Amino acid sequence: MVWIIILLLVLISLVLGIIYLTGAIGKFGLIEKASGGKKYRRRIISLGIVTLFMALFTCIFSFVNAVIILLHFVIFRLLFGLIIRIVKKITKKDFHVYWEGWATIVCCLIYLTIGYILCNNVWMTKYTLKTDKNLGGLRIALFADSHLGTTFDAEGLSVYIDEMMEQNPDILFIAGDMIDDGTSREDMIECCRILGEVDVKYGVWFIFGNHDRGYYRDKDAYTEEDIVNELKKNGVHVMSDDVELIDDRFYVVGREDRSVRDRKPVDELVQNLDKSKYIIVLDHQPADYDAEAAAGSDLVLSGHTHGGQLFPVTYVGELFHINDATYGYQKRKDSEFIVTSGISDWEIQFKTGTKSEYVIIDVE
Image (cartoon, rainbow, N blue to C red):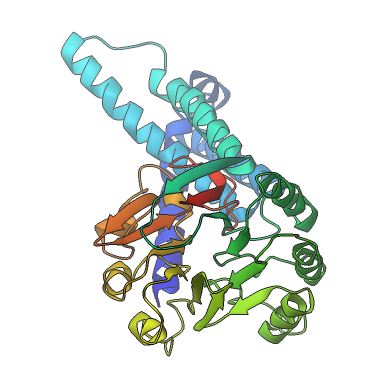
């Protein structure tokens, strides 16, 4: 139901955006001149330009990205339209140059270029945490939301995994959404093979996100069972409401995704654990902080939010209590929480509220 509502809102925004931009483009002097002063001609030419650029961006990126680009032009045009209106009112002067139009084009292109760079390049983010428990030091590598096929394929992911391994981690965690509906079977299999070659002391650990199982994937392509089999065949630990004690030093608690109705409560998962040992919880969606803190988790690692994705909607998830956090570090009681912005993205090629990253965590 949520996705249907989102889809309807996007479609309505797209239609209104096209109508609005058609009128805005018609105010450029060149368009007015080409129309010969005829209002209907100006509208036809303007609509043709909007349609042409939508088709172009769809071919270069995808339809979803074309919609994102169009909506950004609408937002910038509304913003500069308001600014110019205020300036005109204050100065009591009119302008012969269509400043709001040109400012929209220039600023939107700069903004989206920066967003493309922030999404399609990957940075390393480091955290250093302290614990009173007898852990003896642990270096964690973490990534989430690779959504293979959006900004890179399996071979592209292997480059970033190599970078992570240069940091000499003891363990690698994948906090969900490694793949999605757009990931090919070949990419899924190759990714699992690459993960099987990762040489870390305590291995590679995977939990499902809300996209890994797919929403509309053709079952002839591959199923959840195929994913699990490929991961396990390559030595990856797949966790679905499971708990493992590692080296008698720390626990890994891998939770089912929040979208799974019958997932176990976190207190049930940890109730019989030795609380003197360090407890790491992997939970794709950062949306159960109070329960995880009350259960005695020491560290909870999540993804899902993409760091807020696009400014200014960055913290909408927190505002409407969909998520407990959007990005970064937080502490509640004695529990520490880290949300990564993700190493890639679902479908959208732009990040303007954050950047793509993998995470290195030292627990001392």
